Image (cartoon, rainbow, N blue to C red):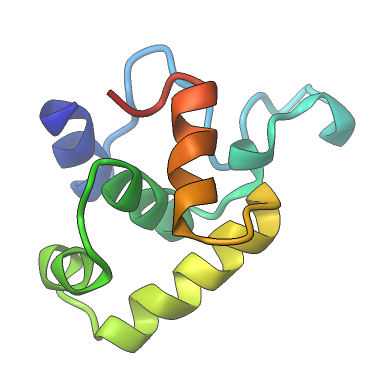
Length: 98
């Protein structure tokens, strides 16, 4: 999991993972919600799902806490998650959290 977070934080894709746009040939309705996340939203998603706090994610990404909070708000909306627990639960359901 730590290696996956490092890869995403560095902007490198996960081996075999579809994300942030997924398969270009897939119809939008065929995509999972996390595949609609922007690259930065996906980074925030994986950091939070990996147990980082908003403050820790901001420090790791070298951005303001408010920036991470804004991205996280978009992540929750796109995933249909009412709160952070919902984000983490979603990550576990789709196999993106340890």
